[in-house]
Image (cartoon, rainbow, N blue to C red; front, side, top):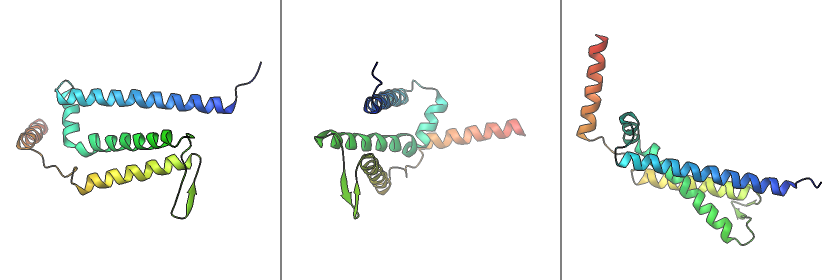
Length: 141
């Protein structure tokens, strides 16, 4: 019996990682759809709306960076992405990983520049916070 090669193990690991990633994206999308239609618990919904940059912006940046790197890797022809930058040669696994980090940081930086995380809470959200804090003070006092 022939032992499986290391390349087949690496391919299997890649497919498994991509499958887990796709399932995670679908779960994340389900949570966002539930948030949009108020189908999720109020506590989770308030957490998402209070931290939109963290709960929506950063995962979307990560998924977008992964999509960019994946498309570039597939369009490279050989399936291996490598590039030269800053006087260094990025080949093998370092190529896609470095490109993903650069894409992710660029997307997060642009999100910060346009002020996505600087959203002020609405009056109804302020009222909810004040109501919650006043009920806690009554229970403690």
